[in-house]
Image (cartoon, rainbow, N blue to C red):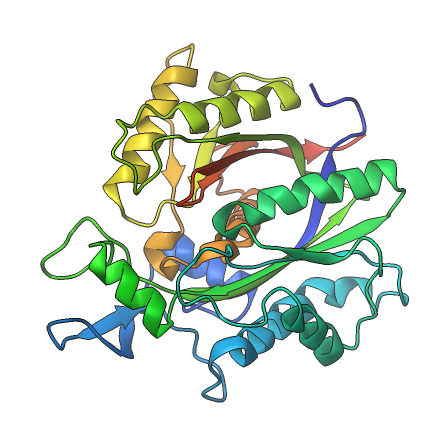
Length: 346
């Protein structure tokens, strides 16, 4: 169970996706169910253009340079209310694509961080900053590290950022070969996308109601999306139960869920199985939000998108309640659960 004072507040967010270049714009588009899927420059095996959720920037950047520019916009928006950070005082955790991904953009583990910091003129904390290469579960991992930095190392703030793109030739070719892309002949798939985001975390949230991360849970799923093992939802169930225990609550205390589900039946089935195995009291309604319907499959960026969506929904009073579960899973089998709570922080 989380001890008093062990939560971290989500102070501000910045987002860049196919449906907007700022957090308010993206969150409004997601709330309205808008999409911006366009033809990419890639074709499938039938010669048809592959649709994607592309970020429309001012120049036709590609590859790592586009990740840099998306991160620049997202981080600038996120840190603007706080002013420029003092040199070597702000830990920055950058979440990127998992290492096993085919077509993974080069330089993610070293060059990207340096290029982004130079572009922004930020001199990040030299010991506590770094890259987290866990794909869709990267942001929950970063939250765990940030909580330790704040409560064990005395950091007042931590910046968590993420950027990713699946709009890469080898990545799309492999996904199509696996039958995972949404098309006219395949309903069991997703729209590939790209995006970036950032959230500022703090121990001292200030006055008024705040959105805080109060629980985290992690586990492994043996029957991952590529496995022939029957899916029982074991990994996600364990991760959710750990997160609930960390937050000191139960599943029926959760008001609604946000997930990284992007359209594949496997992940929706997993979420349903985990729900049946964690819910002890019946709820008349239990909403599940999946922003990827609007912004496409954005890999590691979905974590910051989920946090920003939760923050906007709570501040603008359109959430289904103050207690939120975000859960995510990687194709390799890692599972993560994040418990969020909105209210006065004492």
